[in-house]
Amino acid sequence: MVVSLPKHWTQLNELKQGDVVSIAINRDRSLVVFPGAKKEREMNTITLHVEPDEKDIFVIRSIIACYLNGYSIIRLVSKKFFTVAQQKAIRGIVQMLYMRIMEADTKEMQIATLIDESKASIQTGINRMYKISSSMCRDACTALKNQDAALAKSVFTLDDEVDHFSFFLLRLLRRAAVDSALANQLDLEPIDCLDYQTLVHRIEQVADQAANIAKHLIMLEGRQKKVSVPLLEKMYAAGCDALASYDKAVNALLSNDVKCSDEIIESQAKIEKLDQDIAALAFSKEKSTEVICACCSLRDSIRRIAEFAADIAEITINRSYRPSF
Image (tube, rainbow, N blue to C red; front, side, top):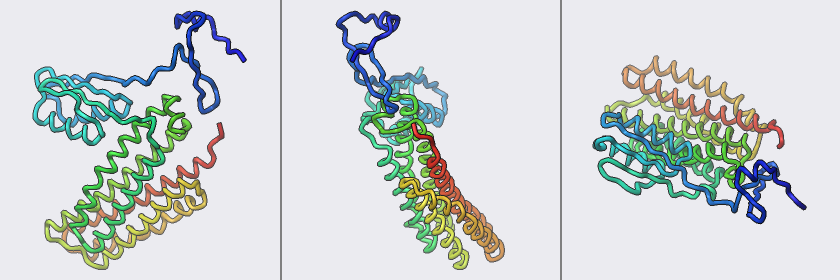
């Protein structure tokens, strides 16, 4: 069979008889024609100009934005020289994003990502990210029950690992949303990019709340404050319920279990009731203002974990009605 090429397109690409073109198949089974042999994906490069008085947090945000938008090489240039704070910030975020500093001096740095994204797996990355966040929640609940500051410190340090996965997966999903070839390699439909982006955000937020629980336990230990046993038991029960909802929600999404997802959303009323009981108990039984404030933050984190679980459950329900392409 023969494929006829538009004359204007051949002239635009300066093609003549006998030249090579290549064809790729999209996920919707349509064909894409490339002029010449298909080239290897080029590494996108961008240059960021850093002012001497620029805050290090803005430098970090700029690097993250470039990374999430698919740039593989980021060149940083300073008009004078990088301050100590800027250098420290750059090296810290480079490590967080699994990048490498390829060249560096006082006025210029070049950082690059060396990961072959076409061989990555969104599902595997999400599963690993979820397992870390789930273990953080489980250990945070145990640390809460036993007022164990040492375990809480261990939980807090794991938050960076979840952030590593979050940045990498969001980068892949953003690129796949605009690059059909990468989406094909990652076995993603366009709508998957939207759903998985929300899922990654929710998993990262659950990990943040587990880290917040750990942080307040560490703070209470440092100030030699204790929470009363009845209040601890209530918060522990609510935490276990929230964690159970979270585990069920992610597993339901991965297995497309709509019935379980609906049950998770309905179960929010039970956790809200526990949250109200915790608030009443904290204000009636605790005398220390510091303990009351810490308990308010702890119950807020537990409630948020349950809410994020419900959000994930809604993704599953929404995906069950998506049209087939």
